[in-house]
Figure 1 (tube, one colour):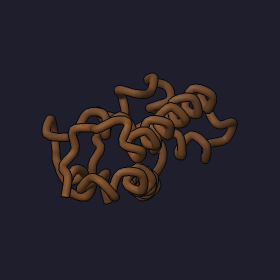
Figure 2 (figure 1 turned 90 degrees about the vertical axis):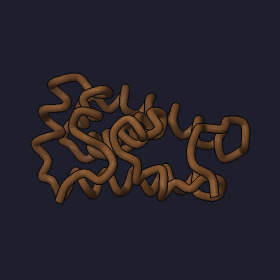
Figure 3 (figure 1 turned 180 degrees about the vertical axis):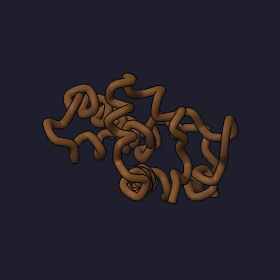
Figure 4 (figure 1 turned 135 degrees about the vertical axis):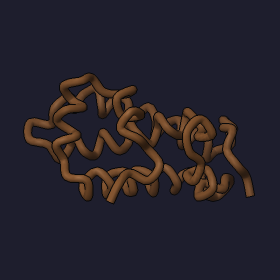
Amino acid sequence: MALQFLTKEDIKIVVDPDTFDVIMQSDEDTLERAELAAMEEVSGYLRSRYNIKQAYQYTGLERNQQLLLITTDVMIYHLISWLPKRLGYDIRETRYLKWLDWLQDVQAGKISPNLPTY
């Protein structure tokens, strides 16, 4: 199986090369499960107002770049937490908490991302 929404190039945007190498040592099933878990976590905040299923079907430059970053960071946060010594956990936790705040603001109607609506 392979990543659904993200690409390996997307992951390189938010992690340093050493962390990327460690993450890519995970088997593809683990990467896919982490990505799907991240997509579901993000969707939980957005699906009441946005057609997040449609947004996750876009590819390439059609994808919302904010959604791309959030999903990548959430996936990396969960992957890092599974690793021994939780490599780079502090920065991952900081970014993860930042995105949770952003998602809560979207949910509350304070932010309106460019995502398809119902």
